[in-house]
Amino acid sequence: MPTIFTHAVLPIALGIGLGARRIPRRLMAAGAVAAMLPDFDVLAFKLHIAYADTFGHRGATHSIAFALLVGAAAMLLARRLRARPSVVFLFMAGSAFSHGVLDMLTNGGLGVALAWPLSNERLFLPWRLIEVSPIGMRFLSSRGWQVIQSEMLWVWLPAACMAAALVWIRAAGGARAGDPAARQ
Image (cartoon, rainbow, N blue to C red; front, side, top):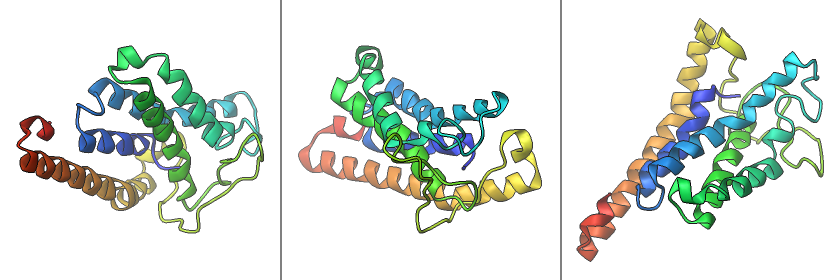
């Protein structure tokens, strides 16, 4: 898995790129939490649930079904998140879903149960570019620094480029339309 902090990078970058009018700051922060939420399954280790179990690490909480559940539950908070329920659903479900996708890009672990509850098969993407992070505080080691460097290259840099491109598109569109609010 990437480090817990890196999972938050994608919704933050998307929120910045789309702007506060589309993705209010509260929703962006909630999306960052939703992107990190699946890794709370590491508590399974403390409960003696095996890694490969349905409710073990990278199991049910890393699935599309879980992401949809997060999005649906978040819709109940749409007013507090200051966005339309449909926007909350899409952003939160997408944020939670991004977690499993990033984990599928790592070069370690057992894979991700993306199709749970239909299948408990653990999957990886064909490109396994991201160094897998050590679980717990071990990521503060020299191995952890290698992981951070890998994440900066394969997640943070593309996310920053996406955010910059979206900001530029918004600014260019607002400038053509004479809408200074589009630059927010």
